[in-house]
Image (tube, rainbow, N blue to C red; front, side, top):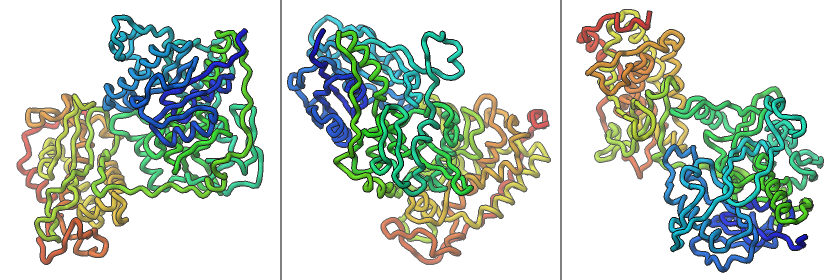
Length: 613
């Protein structure tokens, strides 16, 4: 029986998730390569005997890689990710895959594993022409194994799907969903999935001060640490009310993606831990402390445990975002450990789990982590904005409140040729996906034209007029100029809040055109409205477009708010310069325009709106 240990080289090594699992299975990690400093620093710290190089793979000579028996790696998968919605650079991603496969062919390891997202299978056949990977030969590289794994099936407290291809044995699942356990025979002895709640119960909440020394037991391993040695957990994670509202809206009312729970459900495995933890994909945890509901992100350490790293594994990076990224880009070592076990058996070696390190980390003290705060976000002054009004009504047609850069309206309080930083618009988007999507920006006059058919219905006409009167009364006092609203959105000042404006508009629409009654009421399509979907446009969207267009008209052109709130408006001299007397736009003209349009209404009949009755 072979006595020597299998040697592992890890390309695109990241923080070392694949290698950690193989090391636990008794292999020697001899080489790591990545182009990210936080990744290579993390890999070096946890795999001290390996030669680690920070470099693009194109700059490394294949013959300079130390001898190895097992080649592993995960070429960056963002180009193939389903979340990219077709926006990824597939060719750039495939070049990295080609580089990995060239090493496979030239060095001919006994076993090899390439990790990526499931979507890559669309681009890689089972037999890959050598010419495609840059080898001048008519032969092919055979890929014996291609499989998609749900990491939750191997004890990882995360339902993360990973595609592995190469030459390696496939382990049988060890866990299953509770609803599926009864379908399997008792001989398999499968365990229930490990849940997010199991992870959260392991650690004290970071929303309170670090407790006096207690023992933290690793949910994934036979390992325990005193709390004073636990790193990456006691740092700033609480979401502000604005952050929570923004993330909640992104999860529940995204323009084209499905609804996600807020906060995350804890009674099942966590969703995929992603590299960025302040967006739609943020793992949000809800806690009640002193009878108050609070929301937070998962800590760096919680994310690492969800990924299946031991609680003694250390992560490097100058900020929290760098460590979140290293973890989110990793591969759960609990999965690769199972594969490593079978590789050891297949090669005639014993697989004895290597003891995990439990001593205090050397590079940083846990107290430094406790002081860690999120870096202040420095938004560009032209930060983009796009929100749905009144919300996610239906796929394929939506009204959006947006900003556009550069502005085309000249601020009435400033000298020419200064323009607003941005303009604010009402935009109608019809269709899904870039190839099929059509967009149209409405002026106030065009938005009024859009609601012409409503004038055939007396009750709805009265509701429309009352709605606009309420909009004037409730919204007008706070409709600042376009530059002030934009500077507030870019967090240069705190005068206004475009997200709150969207919420207020949506509430007014719901008050006068409630979704329960008008959800399936349409303005029919005609030659005059050829930009609408074939079925027509929902009345709720049409009246939303009217309010948004009205607000944009005032925001872009009016000076009434600026005259009354001169100390609150944005007057950065690098963008705008003050001047003297100016024209004031009458905000009440919207009702005059509606009345004019009402008198010139199209000859419509109520039969077209039978869905209202």
